[in-house]
Amino acid sequence: MKVRRGLQAQRFRPNVWETVQAKAVFISEYQHSIKSCKHNEAIINALCAVWQAGRIYQAAAMFADTVNERVSVYDKLIYADGMSIARDE
Image 1: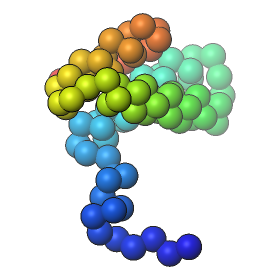
Image 2: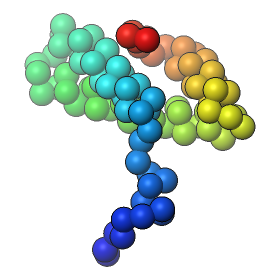
Image 3: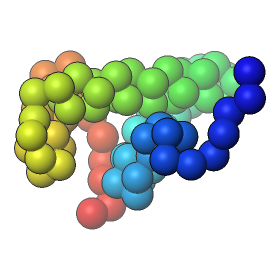
Image 4: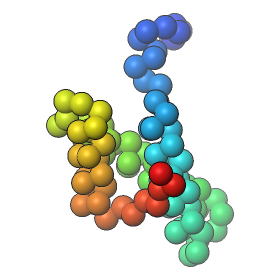
């Protein structure tokens, strides 16, 4: 199956906030995991955390009309899930 570049493919590319957030989630989980795991396992844990945060963001998008609302709902869901993410904002 060939994927054409254009408007359809653009829908699946992360925006700047999503990219920065994914990096923050990855680094946070990696730093937490490396204390008790080997390097490879810490990377796997960090990738899983990014996937989980992405799913939470996807769920937040279902309940929000604007980007600001989406981020607010995302923050609440992340906190409720017990994920602690240090941000450099």
